[in-house]
Length: 317
Ligand code: GFB
Image (cartoon, rainbow, N blue to C red; front, side, top):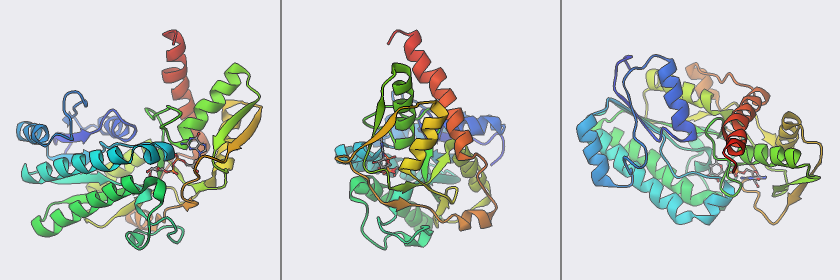
């Protein structure tokens, strides 16, 4: 990619897309195209067609998706499969037909079987049953991977597919019903401290293990792989270490400064017991993450205070 190449970032207001946008601008890319959801509904094939015909981007990062935490996935299966399939089919097909030079597709570590051997290698894809709480999202993402591979095989279309582990950072969703665990815990501990509550209730048992990558590291990896990797075969993007949800809770509690008790609501799902990616392929290619978990959570908490908690207080909400 040249610094003046036309790059379209689909989903630039989301966690991943906004990080890609920041990273692209920081690296000196001067011709980045974005559209809000109101301007371009990516589920609308005709609208996507018109956009690609008019803009003719050279590179595409497909970071637009219907996403959410364990409960949102379980509650809205129709949207998690339907919206994601539509977005992917429309964008990948239009990108090929309107001459995009290369596309970066973003999947998820939940595409792998629920009980895949840990750490999970890329070749575990489609070797076993999926985790039921997120199989709708996973099936859509697997279809996206396969669509990229089919277009590569039949048409020679250059598409890479990255499988990020659980992500966190600025512009995350902090809604307690639909968010992922890390932003949910930041908010729960923060509000409990501010309101002087005696305890915080988390979901499940606290025993599942998860791996967390700061979204600025993911954006850096995606830009780097777009320039250094050229194969439709998957690449895992993670840190190579995981922690239990109860350990994560202790870490976030200490960062936020909450001194009360932690309780668990065992009626809520745990999800997959463990989801640690094998990142040896990524390391062999030459990329490693930089942001440590404590440092990343501290800066995300600072972002939350400035942009969500204090902003709500300032507006009287
Ligand atoms: O991040 P999370 O919602 O999704 O939940 P997954 C991770 C773990 O944290 C689960 C526990 O064991 C939850 O039960 N947890 C504890 C909580 N307290 C909370 C809380 O207050 N909120 C939330 N959200 N979780 C998602 C998939 O799975 O991972 C998506 O559903 C996607 O499809 C994403 O792949 C990366 O890690 O279980």
